Image (spheres, rainbow, N blue to C red):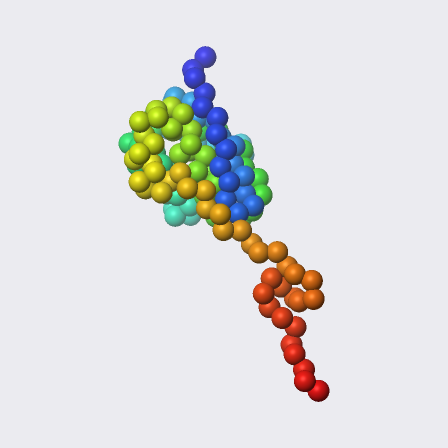
Amino acid sequence: MPQEFIATGRRKTAVARIRLVAGSGKIEVNGKSFEDYFPTLNLQNTILHPFHTAKTINQFDVRVNTSGGGVNGQAGAVKLAVSRALIQFDPALRGTLKEDGLLTRDPRMKERKKSGQPGARKRFQFSKR
């Protein structure tokens, strides 16, 4: 059985768990082809970015299980997971991927709503009289 690299990526509230196996470049997300799951070219390029940086296009088959958040958050989570899996495959790629900012977990999350106001920062309208 070929060696399998497993990694997890997160972005906002999205989580992506991936399995990277040597193959022909087939990417499957939640049982669908990734072109169907991520319809826009921009989202597809986000996922392929680590492969382009590492010059490993069409060398791996990727099976993705993703949940939470929206499609943008999920695409970011997959990108991080793929980058982490590529490092498991070849630790020498770490410098190249890090230089491109692909190993940084994006910490930006939605700020929680506070009590006594309608949103995280917005206040109810003030009335003097």
